[in-house]
Length: 442
Image (cartoon, rainbow, N blue to C red; front, side):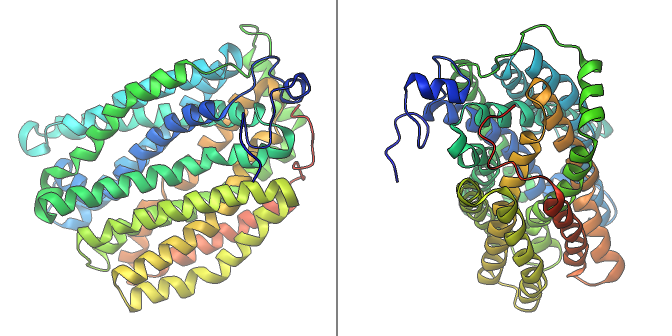
């Protein structure tokens, strides 16, 4: 590979400054790290809740049976998605008006607050229904912050990248989900190994949340030192006019982006559900189940970066579509393998392979969501499209997975639901315009 002095494949010449659109302040690897660190923390929190849905349900939503407790916990997980579009609207627009860095700082501060609450919140047994209400509020704060971060972050990464490396640099946004999944799973496994299954289910699940809170000040410090990539008229921004412009001139792109998000979101949350699936359906111990997010994290990270790099060479559409088609073919056999032979080995293989395929395609899809939108409203548009898609398709995913298994009695039924969604999403990937050959991001 070419030696990295600024961004991969970049130099510090005036010619590059003109290409990136950053004047004399090109984005460097440390700035990528800063952007990704904040995104990792925000994905880390959502991943933790998904992985620890069973003990969180028992702590804050006690019920006569474990299934009801789990459903209430998963419904609260979905509440966080409800707030995402509002965060996208407020923070995303703020990123177009005041700059990408300011928006990313705001979202990170809010995420720290939302992460602290479940870490220290007394259980239902201690303070009664107030515990459930406060947890819902925490999920709303977390969702608001998460929804507002995507647009500014993906805009920042790709606006600061040389055109021939935009796919690879932009893929770090989705690669951050792989890092977050890997970290949350690794910390969860470590906690369970040290204090045991019973203690982890009882109170130890709070420790990974506290670890995340402790890292927030570091993320704030490094994000605060970012150069700004937004070169528009700071402060001169009319939200209604930008909405009208996007919806009027980009109706087809917006519709196809939503279809694409249907195909990318459900597979991700099905894989995030594998920990709960392993405990509640396969009846594996929590120490085994928590290896699923580690496998998922590795697959996500490798798949996302490989997809971004390949899209710079071969174009966006082939790298969106080909891994997606392989994913469609591989999903049912791999799920059947896990259900027939439930073990750590089958769990790790199935989760890792499916995660790599999904994220290889998804990383490119998320970049395209930003590339097809105008720069003047890219932060808002990308945040809102991503957040609405995640709310509609991701917020109900884990609840739907649990209900399908209970209703049909078939542990593989969530895979069929995912296959339908990803097949429809693939149609959108085929139809959306190719953006990988565009030299300037306008």
